[in-house]
Length: 112
Image 1 (cartoon, rainbow, N blue to C red):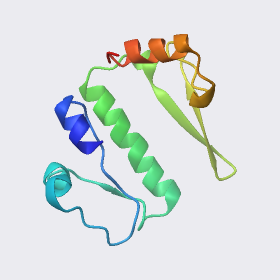
Image 2 (image 1 turned 90 degrees about the horizontal axis):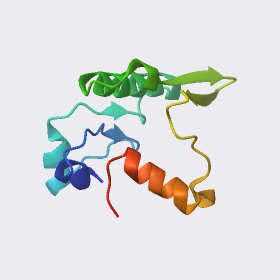
Image 3 (image 1 turned 90 degrees about the vertical axis):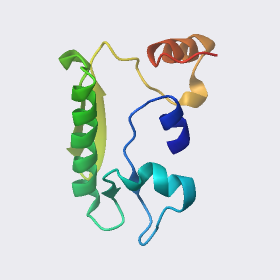
């Protein structure tokens, strides 16, 4: 995924999920200069908030429309994500129709 994001010139946010993990080889080179969010060391809520802020910073740097903002709302130690109406309604990808897939590919500027 990291290599693919570089090839496609897409932003990526490295997340460390396993304590003590050190990326080796090409993955270490790709992510070496990037700041990562360490879910293995931080309380989940704190790490998640950092991730949301980082996503918003990337979106802002890409000139994302204010109406396209994704908002995370913590509810009883759960996270519920709400999206504006300009976003595709995400439901279980196993339930996507062919039209859902095509719409997602078009929105992400991907080709089949």
